[in-house]
Length: 342
Image (cartoon, rainbow, N blue to C red; front, side, top):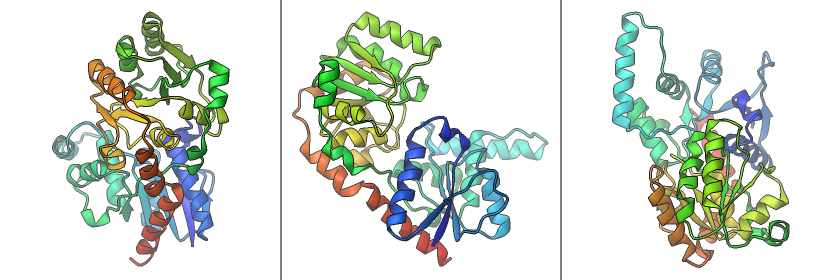
């Protein structure tokens, strides 16, 4: 079987979850005998059995349309979530449809993502919450939905804390890893909460020299317990060592589906304090401390509760047993075989 992988160009600039998801899925599919071709926008043709598109959006809807015209089957990982309810999304789309009838050429982000989902033959949301929004918000037939979780590299289970401790002299701290300047990651609320967190806090992720980044730095300086470290490469030994050296990993994002970095940290043995938005419960169940991302008090409370607990061996086992990339690839291949029979 030969699969074409297509993703937005912007993943080359931001080494985030979508890039990791596509690359790790492709790598593990290769072990299962599937040939993956990464299709670039410069190609005028491609010979594949089906196309797997990552991200429902303006930069991918064109290829979904083209594949539909050519009769090429498509699988879509929409990478979609919103804190708006399915009811509100559905209402917005109905209003957009009415405006279109009287000549409005404006298309909303919801409208584009909805059309992308309807063009795809099979949709692979990462969480049950994402699936619910697509079904009830976009009005997509549930039979087109197969939930495929995000995965994690098992190498993080062997992380060693020594390198980080030797370099920075910090141990059993609170760790944040991510795109610090991305408002969705909500670092600013963590900085607001930092004076009330009973631990040193390490932030790995470069901040932009803009209003948001500078405000985060001012809050951190005032708190006095925050250490900033520039973005580390995903395969950096220092990154995996940081996961192992920390006590609690924190993701205060406005939503996560589910936050690959949190799974990496959990494999390294860290406790997790994480947003309650975006379907994180599908992955972490009752083994983590959840927080309300809009409340700095809630963030501080969740982190402090986590700090009072021993590191969780049970969570590490759950992640390893259920969310390794080889398991995710096997589930994805099952869907490919199903679509091949449509």
